[in-house]
Length: 281
Image (tube, rainbow, N blue to C red; front, side):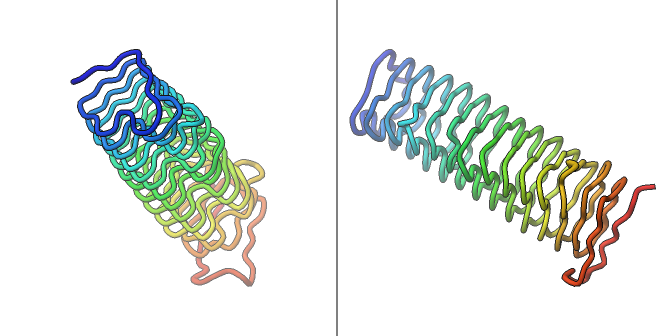
């Protein structure tokens, strides 16, 4: 493997069609497409400033690197990538990729990041700011996530999440086959129009959660005191620990909780309109 250390590259495509290359303390300055159409790339302690630095890269390890705000849209159409201990200050990262793994990564501008990823594993990742991260991702595993970005995990399929702290709105819209364990999800309109969404040992906050959901399951979950009008037009099996402020017009299923502030069943309820709402004895 060829090794390059302590050098600076700029301009257009300075390392185009590089293969079996190891970069150590390399700086990619202003310009475009620093590493494009490459394979078997290792980057350690590198600094990326220019746009589109890693497109169409097959096989890479990126460790202890920094991506400046100018390195926007940095990694698209790549596969088989592992990234660890990196800081990203640029938006629109990671699109149309497969087999991507991140560990101990901080993304400070998560706008439109993780779009269309097939096979994503993240461990101890922090997302800040921005909108629509993880949109249209498939086959995702999460082990530790902190996020204050808006509209996370929309239109995702086959997702497993552990130990997440998510503060957002409109999260998990139109997802399918998603299970969330031991997590806190705060924000309005959680999980609307979802299918096969399962929440286990989770705490939920925000207005009107879990409406228009199909085959929704909650196991040993808790609700914030101001969490109201839950489950409207949903088919649901819910075991709720503690009190829930209000439930409105669930379509079908069973809801068990320790108490309810209000149960709203009015003329707008949709068939089969046979959901059992039970106080735990």
